[in-house]
Length: 148
Image 1 (cartoon, one colour):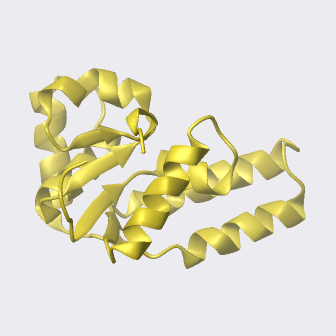
Image 2 (cartoon, rainbow, N blue to C red):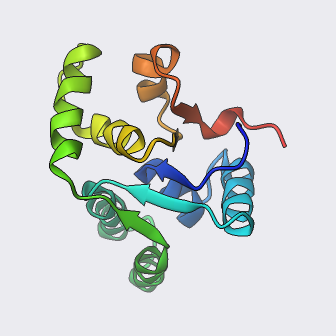
């Protein structure tokens, strides 16, 4: 990680790591504590909340978690201090990035477009995304690669 930052872009995979247990929970929690301590602002594109909400709902629907747990997680999500960046550049930037990286869809590129717009790092647990663009983009960071 680089020096002091004022903002970071996070994706749904990182938020889901905070809400559900996963293999990178320790690294995710480390980032949460560090960013809160350093007053780092978390940013994301408009689709962020829809993505996380859908995963919570899917887990309730398929009985992976109880409905009450789904409600609890949804309430935690709505309390996460994530600033949504809704700008024409997010969509235009995502389109250009998907074209530059020769990707079939623009969804994940919205996160990278926000990171470019905010001039910050973009943190994810999405290995496919890391494989697709990681070596060719200086902003993208894999949460699982953190060593405290």
